[in-house]
Amino acid sequence: TKNNLVNWKLNLTEFQKEILNVNPKVLINWPEKNLYDKTMKWKIIPICYTVPSNDIKNQIWINCERFIPKIYKFVKSLKNVRTALISKMGGNVILKKHKGWADVANHVLRCHFPIIIDKDKSGVIVSDVKKYHELGDVILFDDSLLHTGFNESNKDRYILIIDFVRPTNIPKGISKIESSKEL
Image 1 (cartoon, rainbow, N blue to C red):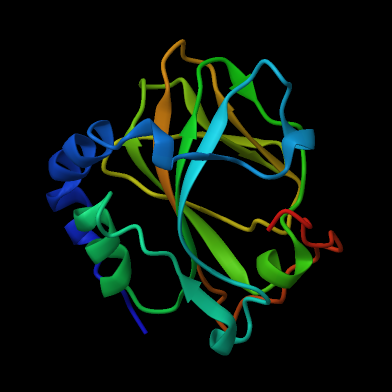
Image 2 (image 1 turned 90 degrees about the horizontal axis):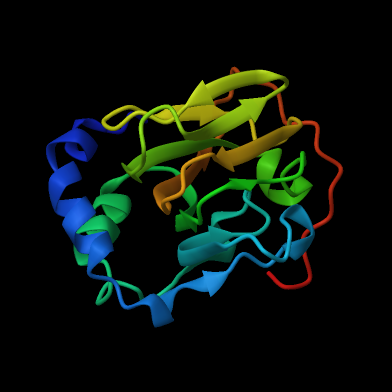
């Protein structure tokens, strides 16, 4: 089933305003602290998650509509979503190389929708291929492969991360990493 992602570009300015008005208290630390140095900042607003991601009965939506109503409505309008969250990565952060959790990453493809970025300063490196975030563009990658995220800017960057069901013509992912207990 196809999603109309044009609404992402059409509403980007509204999403940017919305994210800048979020109370910082609603952001929580990314649970896998082993991926980044203690001096680095990486916080999230969880929107929904499904663990394991191949069983929709396990999907849980977080009541964050009051904090990010327009972004929440956009995510809810999409089909085959399994995970969604806002990622706020502080300045000068480079994550350690890692693979996504097997019970999630092996069943999805991950999308990064940039909200607020400095051009040519943040992105992902997947299997040694570097891709920068660009406003209005989406990065799609296989979270089960070895990858890292980075923000080389001095400013915070905000990304909407959405995991979509892996299409049937793409083989199951290869991660063997167990889910974090903090999840």
